[in-house]
Amino acid sequence: LRVRERAVLPASVRSDLDNDLTAPAEIECMSQPRILMLGPPGAGKGTQSANLADEYDVSHITTGDALRANKDMDISDMDTEYDTPREYMEAGDLVPDAVVNAIVDEALSSADGFVLDGYPRNPEQADELEDMTDLDVVLSLEVSRDELVARRTGRRVCDDCGTNYHVEFDQPEVEGVCDGCGGDLVQREDDNEESVRNRLNVFDENTQPVIDGYENHDGYVAIDGERTPDEVWADIRSAVEEHAE
Ligand code: ADP
Ligand code: ADP
Ligand code: ZN
Image 1 (spheres, rainbow, N blue to C red):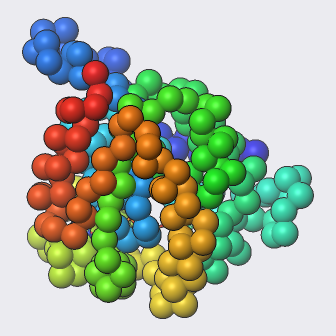
Image 2 (tube, rainbow, N blue to C red):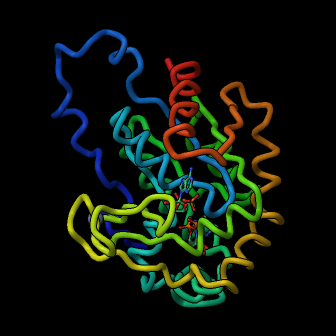
């Protein structure tokens, strides 16, 4: 199983080189938190995880992006129903555990601090993660059904760097063009109504029980994800400051 590295480890491989030795003490003792970001599809996990990766200089590990960059990799040796992740993703079904577990395992092994987004999505993956690492902060973004649908149908994603936008709630300076890199903003193939509906069912059946299971974790914080991106970010930052050391 081969995974393109850039997709698994965007922005922050540079951490060590960039660390300023004269940085204020509070930044030093806050360094490298291990953060899990939970929530339904469209809740804002990707958007807020990008903020966390910037602010705390940790790796943003996201199984959705890693899989999109490797949609056609050959997984036939893993005894799966389909030969590539593509078929599962287009239908909004879960890609087999063996594939995503391997992606996360590899990404975690080269990360100190991280924000993990899009995994675990079922209780088996949660068990697997428990064997791989401890977590300092477990964030659960809570957003109502109606709002989720509006967010997803308006989501646009940069073709090049993966930054999220929204046609109404988070517009770029120039329509259709990424502020950061000038790439084209496109609609994801699986942001169509049928796939979206299936993803919500998959979430209810498989992922909600995972979130319930984390409620007793010491670092668990439920976040009201229905407010503006800036308001949500302020709460997330407080939660991390409180739980990471
Ligand atoms: P969203 O942003 O809508 O929550 P993602 O980008 O996280 O969706 O994931 C897109 C697709 O990739 C999912 O519908 C699923 O097919 C696959 N996928 C992502 N993460 C996992 C995972 N942990 N386990 C199984 N499949 C996954
Ligand atoms: P997820 O990774 O959980 O699937 P995203 O971060 O991709 O969610 O967000 C889904 C869509 O909603 C994107 O178009 C994003 O720009 C938009 N969005 C994110 N956070 C908010 C918010 N607090 N209010 C309104 N729209 C938001
Ligand atoms: Zn871009």
